[in-house]
Image (tube, rainbow, N blue to C red; front, side):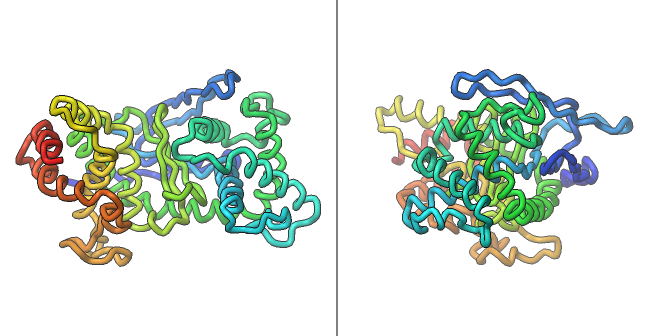
Length: 379
């Protein structure tokens, strides 16, 4: 019996604050308290988002899945970062007139504030990698937590003072009116379309996948729903995960994140939050055998595992293979790592190890410890 049959059809809950959409794919768990972050020694108070439940709702299911957001401030932040990074890489003219990438016919005033924001991002953040930079992670989390605010300086509402660096706040607040008028409507529509497309896949398969991944990695799925921020762009990888708290960011426009592939991307990213057991086991086995720790074997294992779990789920409701996936398996689905050639860029040996030693564990024929030991031994 599928997850949707067990727990019934879940509603799309739209939260009408600012430009934010929550898609709660599980029953609300009550009041969600978001932990505020300390950014540049500025202590920010806690803020909570009440999630009321109908009185006749059944008890919450044992595992949470995802909570989707299309937030204005994070989308603006990623857009400014993308344009600045593109210009720094020489993909666009360095002339300030080129700073309006993606926006045509700006007024002189709009051009001035938009160019100023791009210039600030180019000088301050363009060289940072949003997937690994601690500073960028903290900024991202803060913008997510204050997504319903009309401004980030607390001018209209004191509780909306996000505690960000003054120049960053000035750049974002200054560019907000241009972005809201010129780019945000289409970005938000695209984000909502993506959410609407992936929601049925998660409703149908989410709980089973969460249970199975937790079982494979011998841990528990996160107790709280995993926040997923959907943005127009999300760096060169199209999606990334930040930890503590566990949050996923995914691009609605990236071709790698569409159809059944979106389900794989979501659960691969979420797996980063439960993969410590894999890393620990590989490191422990390498130390015992006095072998160097293989770079990214644990990450290749996450890609392989999620891809193999998605394979049998990739048939659409008519029983036909996904049109976006070339056929190389019984389901017609090609896992992300194969599709994107990751095993041809330094992971060639890993695919052999995973197929020969990890797959038997997925099939229930060997134990977790034996699979890890055999892989490390064969390195």
